[in-house]
Image (spheres, rainbow, N blue to C red):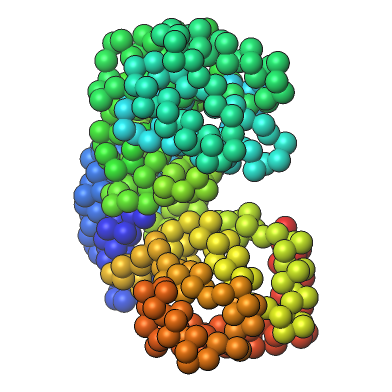
Length: 442
């Protein structure tokens, strides 16, 4: 996420991180490089210029050059200004209605339908929310079918009516259905076009006026850069939406949309999409994103993702198995599934301070666990429960069945044994303290 921008900003701030004498001249030169990095990331030139001018004024005003740690203070000013530029504080979603109505808008191909499903899944996992997805794209039957597929995948009901061609009537009927059947959130997926046009704007305006949603969200593809900002402005001028959703932030995005969209439309970014999986949705925290852009990681978000997958009952079950030396490959497989639900591996690495920079040129396959899972699935239930019984002939069979080599099977067995010993040791005082700390964090 934002690898290119992070790298360029790191180089620009190199002098200010203690690698040379800091003077007013090289501060100005550094900020010139910062501005160039922002423009290369597709941030509007005026916004980039205003940003660096503000940073310079604050740096001179706070007497950075004479401070005990000028480089740290300078980086802090850059971070604070990036945070303000992206919105300052995280904005929540308005769920005050009975039911709460959320209207999704955006161009075709922005990821609107998929994100509607992600948002429904996100709210459903809050336990107190029972969302209903509504298909209001009357022009593309495939969009309706896609929403049904997404709904089935996450276990959320989808309301649709392929016979009705008036999206306003579909939306109104869906809200009535929600009230009658105990749904407390209604997420309405609307039609998009390849470009902003009058017909689309009239239609979304009609829906908006008829249903009076508590929340109107504009979904935009972050990879389109400044075009995303311009499209957001066109929608906002007509619709006056409440917030922005940035999708595809896991791709080769330059970051311009995330940095400058708030400044242009004066509406907050509320959520971001970080992958294809239904769990790949995050609340947008400007301060955390500024940390990541500056290579400082985002440990808080990493811990939150881990906590979302943390099951206390499962943890207790695993603890008992470890204590009795009965931790097997079926248990290990469940742990892998939990890690995978946290997001793609490169994104997770980017949340660890310093790791993102070290791993930037390393291609981390999102299916990094694929060969491990294949090996485990090639074992018999008895072998998964009792790894010590796996002898040479069994290893050959497992390797052949999983499309791997005996050496890879041996490597997994060795790693599993080492991990089991470590987990056994963790049952001691230090491990119990760590487990208690994790519980107290919830």
